[in-house]
Image (cartoon, rainbow, N blue to C red; front, side, top):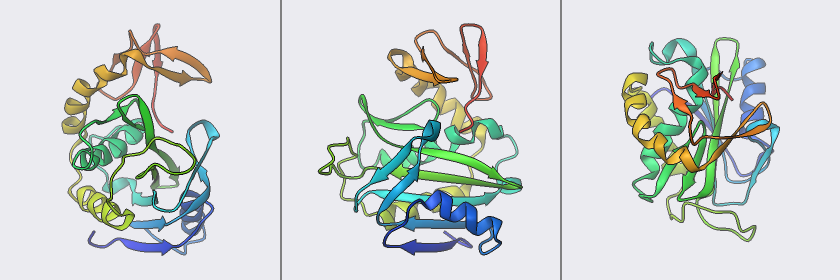
Length: 214
Protein backbone atom coordinates (compact mmCIF):
# COMPACT_ATOMS: atom_id res chain seq x y z
CA UNK A 1 0.00 0.00 0.00
CA UNK A 2 3.10 2.18 -0.17
CA UNK A 3 2.64 5.65 -1.71
CA UNK A 4 -1.14 5.38 -2.15
CA UNK A 5 -3.21 8.35 -1.03
CA UNK A 6 -6.37 6.83 0.45
CA UNK A 7 -9.59 8.74 1.11
CA UNK A 8 -12.28 6.97 3.14
CA UNK A 9 -15.92 8.04 3.43
CA UNK A 10 -18.96 6.73 5.29
CA UNK A 11 -21.17 7.35 2.24
CA UNK A 12 -20.68 8.43 -1.40
CA UNK A 13 -22.80 8.48 -4.51
CA UNK A 14 -19.96 6.82 -6.46
CA UNK A 15 -16.29 6.26 -5.66
CA UNK A 16 -15.59 6.25 -9.39
CA UNK A 17 -17.25 9.59 -10.06
CA UNK A 18 -15.65 11.15 -6.98
CA UNK A 19 -12.15 10.01 -7.93
CA UNK A 20 -12.45 10.98 -11.59
CA UNK A 21 -13.64 14.47 -10.62
CA UNK A 22 -10.86 14.84 -8.04
CA UNK A 23 -8.27 13.89 -10.67
CA UNK A 24 -9.67 16.32 -13.24
CA UNK A 25 -9.66 19.12 -10.66
CA UNK A 26 -6.12 18.09 -9.61
CA UNK A 27 -7.24 17.53 -6.00
CA UNK A 28 -5.67 14.06 -6.14
CA UNK A 29 -2.77 12.52 -8.04
CA UNK A 30 -2.06 8.81 -8.66
CA UNK A 31 -1.51 6.48 -7.02
CA UNK A 32 -4.72 7.13 -5.10
CA UNK A 33 -7.74 5.24 -3.82
CA UNK A 34 -11.21 6.19 -2.64
CA UNK A 35 -13.27 3.81 -0.51
CA UNK A 36 -16.73 4.19 1.02
CA UNK A 37 -18.84 2.18 3.44
CA UNK A 38 -22.01 2.84 1.45
CA UNK A 39 -22.65 3.77 -2.19
CA UNK A 40 -26.00 4.78 -3.67
CA UNK A 41 -25.29 5.69 -7.33
CA UNK A 42 -22.34 3.56 -8.39
CA UNK A 43 -21.24 3.11 -11.99
CA UNK A 44 -21.65 -0.36 -13.50
CA UNK A 45 -21.15 -1.95 -16.89
CA UNK A 46 -23.20 -0.69 -19.86
CA UNK A 47 -24.10 2.44 -17.82
CA UNK A 48 -25.98 0.37 -15.27
CA UNK A 49 -25.92 1.49 -11.66
CA UNK A 50 -24.17 -0.53 -8.96
CA UNK A 51 -25.69 0.16 -5.60
CA UNK A 52 -24.95 -1.59 -2.34
CA UNK A 53 -25.59 -1.55 1.33
CA UNK A 54 -23.16 -0.98 4.17
CA UNK A 55 -20.74 -3.85 4.64
CA UNK A 56 -20.03 -4.34 0.94
CA UNK A 57 -16.85 -3.22 -0.83
CA UNK A 58 -16.86 -0.02 -2.89
CA UNK A 59 -13.55 1.44 -4.03
CA UNK A 60 -11.87 3.16 -6.96
CA UNK A 61 -8.16 3.28 -7.65
CA UNK A 62 -6.14 5.63 -9.87
CA UNK A 63 -2.80 4.71 -11.42
CA UNK A 64 -0.57 6.31 -14.02
CA UNK A 65 -0.78 4.25 -17.20
CA UNK A 66 3.02 4.42 -17.43
CA UNK A 67 3.23 2.49 -14.13
CA UNK A 68 1.21 -0.47 -15.45
CA UNK A 69 3.02 -3.56 -16.79
CA UNK A 70 4.52 -2.80 -20.20
CA UNK A 71 2.91 -5.85 -21.76
CA UNK A 72 -0.63 -5.04 -20.55
CA UNK A 73 -3.00 -4.25 -23.46
CA UNK A 74 -4.98 -1.27 -22.21
CA UNK A 75 -8.12 -2.73 -23.76
CA UNK A 76 -7.82 -5.63 -21.30
CA UNK A 77 -7.30 -3.58 -18.15
CA UNK A 78 -10.70 -4.76 -16.85
CA UNK A 79 -9.58 -8.39 -17.07
CA UNK A 80 -6.28 -7.58 -15.38
CA UNK A 81 -7.72 -5.66 -12.41
CA UNK A 82 -10.61 -8.09 -11.97
CA UNK A 83 -8.35 -11.14 -12.04
CA UNK A 84 -6.07 -9.73 -9.34
CA UNK A 85 -9.06 -9.14 -7.09
CA UNK A 86 -10.37 -12.63 -7.82
CA UNK A 87 -7.07 -14.09 -6.65
CA UNK A 88 -7.52 -12.37 -3.29
CA UNK A 89 -11.17 -13.40 -2.96
CA UNK A 90 -10.27 -17.07 -3.44
CA UNK A 91 -8.88 -17.03 0.08
CA UNK A 92 -12.40 -16.27 1.32
CA UNK A 93 -14.45 -18.35 -1.12
CA UNK A 94 -12.82 -20.97 -3.34
CA UNK A 95 -15.70 -20.83 -5.83
CA UNK A 96 -14.98 -17.28 -7.03
CA UNK A 97 -14.15 -16.94 -10.72
CA UNK A 98 -13.92 -14.19 -13.36
CA UNK A 99 -16.55 -14.03 -16.08
CA UNK A 100 -15.18 -12.23 -19.14
CA UNK A 101 -14.28 -9.48 -18.96
CA UNK A 102 -15.01 -7.85 -15.60
CA UNK A 103 -17.62 -9.70 -13.56
CA UNK A 104 -16.84 -11.61 -10.37
CA UNK A 105 -18.97 -14.72 -9.85
CA UNK A 106 -19.52 -17.38 -7.22
CA UNK A 107 -20.77 -20.44 -9.09
CA UNK A 108 -23.44 -18.99 -11.40
CA UNK A 109 -24.15 -15.81 -9.43
CA UNK A 110 -22.60 -12.39 -9.90
CA UNK A 111 -21.20 -10.92 -6.69
CA UNK A 112 -19.36 -7.90 -8.11
CA UNK A 113 -17.23 -6.49 -10.86
CA UNK A 114 -14.89 -3.77 -12.03
CA UNK A 115 -15.06 -0.88 -14.45
CA UNK A 116 -12.12 1.04 -15.90
CA UNK A 117 -11.80 4.39 -17.62
CA UNK A 118 -9.02 6.66 -18.85
CA UNK A 119 -8.53 10.19 -17.59
CA UNK A 120 -5.73 11.54 -19.79
CA UNK A 121 -2.67 9.47 -18.80
CA UNK A 122 -4.39 7.92 -15.78
CA UNK A 123 -6.37 4.71 -15.50
CA UNK A 124 -9.18 4.61 -12.94
CA UNK A 125 -10.52 1.25 -11.81
CA UNK A 126 -13.74 1.02 -9.82
CA UNK A 127 -14.58 -2.17 -7.90
CA UNK A 128 -17.84 -3.20 -6.26
CA UNK A 129 -18.29 -6.48 -4.36
CA UNK A 130 -21.16 -7.77 -2.26
CA UNK A 131 -19.38 -9.24 0.74
CA UNK A 132 -22.48 -10.43 2.60
CA UNK A 133 -26.00 -11.22 1.51
CA UNK A 134 -28.23 -8.24 2.29
CA UNK A 135 -31.91 -7.47 2.53
CA UNK A 136 -31.85 -6.67 -1.19
CA UNK A 137 -31.23 -10.34 -1.88
CA UNK A 138 -28.17 -9.93 -4.14
CA UNK A 139 -25.66 -12.78 -4.26
CA UNK A 140 -22.56 -12.24 -2.18
CA UNK A 141 -19.12 -13.56 -1.29
CA UNK A 142 -20.49 -14.59 2.12
CA UNK A 143 -17.35 -13.56 3.98
CA UNK A 144 -16.60 -11.54 7.10
CA UNK A 145 -13.61 -9.81 5.50
CA UNK A 146 -13.81 -6.07 6.07
CA UNK A 147 -13.67 -3.56 3.19
CA UNK A 148 -10.57 -1.93 4.72
CA UNK A 149 -8.68 -5.24 4.83
CA UNK A 150 -9.74 -6.10 1.29
CA UNK A 151 -8.50 -2.74 -0.01
CA UNK A 152 -5.20 -3.19 1.84
CA UNK A 153 -4.67 -6.65 0.32
CA UNK A 154 -5.58 -5.41 -3.15
CA UNK A 155 -3.24 -2.43 -3.07
CA UNK A 156 -0.43 -4.67 -1.84
CA UNK A 157 -1.04 -6.97 -4.80
CA UNK A 158 -1.11 -4.01 -7.20
CA UNK A 159 2.26 -2.85 -5.89
CA UNK A 160 3.75 -6.08 -7.27
CA UNK A 161 2.23 -5.53 -10.74
CA UNK A 162 2.37 -9.06 -12.19
CA UNK A 163 2.93 -9.15 -15.95
CA UNK A 164 -0.06 -9.46 -18.26
CA UNK A 165 1.48 -12.63 -19.72
CA UNK A 166 1.36 -14.28 -16.29
CA UNK A 167 -2.23 -13.18 -15.61
CA UNK A 168 -3.39 -14.22 -19.08
CA UNK A 169 -1.86 -17.69 -18.86
CA UNK A 170 -3.85 -18.35 -15.69
CA UNK A 171 -7.03 -16.76 -17.02
CA UNK A 172 -6.92 -18.87 -20.18
CA UNK A 173 -7.68 -21.96 -18.10
CA UNK A 174 -10.41 -20.24 -16.10
CA UNK A 175 -12.05 -18.85 -19.24
CA UNK A 176 -13.57 -22.26 -19.97
CA UNK A 177 -16.13 -21.55 -17.24
CA UNK A 178 -17.58 -18.85 -19.54
CA UNK A 179 -18.85 -21.39 -22.10
CA UNK A 180 -22.37 -21.65 -20.69
CA UNK A 181 -22.74 -17.90 -20.28
CA UNK A 182 -23.45 -14.89 -22.49
CA UNK A 183 -21.81 -11.50 -22.96
CA UNK A 184 -23.39 -8.25 -24.12
CA UNK A 185 -21.68 -7.16 -27.34
CA UNK A 186 -22.94 -3.81 -28.64
CA UNK A 187 -26.01 -4.38 -26.45
CA UNK A 188 -26.67 -7.73 -28.13
CA UNK A 189 -26.58 -10.89 -26.03
CA UNK A 190 -24.00 -13.29 -27.50
CA UNK A 191 -23.24 -16.83 -26.41
CA UNK A 192 -19.67 -17.50 -25.25
CA UNK A 193 -19.92 -21.22 -26.04
CA UNK A 194 -17.71 -20.96 -29.16
CA UNK A 195 -15.76 -17.78 -28.29
CA UNK A 196 -12.00 -17.81 -28.82
CA UNK A 197 -9.92 -15.95 -26.21
CA UNK A 198 -7.01 -14.12 -27.88
CA UNK A 199 -3.66 -13.29 -26.26
CA UNK A 200 -4.56 -9.61 -25.90
CA UNK A 201 -7.70 -10.52 -23.93
CA UNK A 202 -10.10 -9.88 -26.80
CA UNK A 203 -12.58 -12.48 -28.06
CA UNK A 204 -13.40 -13.81 -31.49
CA UNK A 205 -17.16 -14.36 -31.62
CA UNK A 206 -18.84 -15.30 -34.89
CA UNK A 207 -15.86 -13.92 -36.78
CA UNK A 208 -15.93 -10.56 -34.98
CA UNK A 209 -13.13 -9.28 -32.74
CA UNK A 210 -14.49 -7.97 -29.44
CA UNK A 211 -12.41 -5.98 -26.97
CA UNK A 212 -12.98 -5.83 -23.27
CA UNK A 213 -12.28 -2.25 -22.15
CA UNK A 214 -15.15 -0.98 -20.00
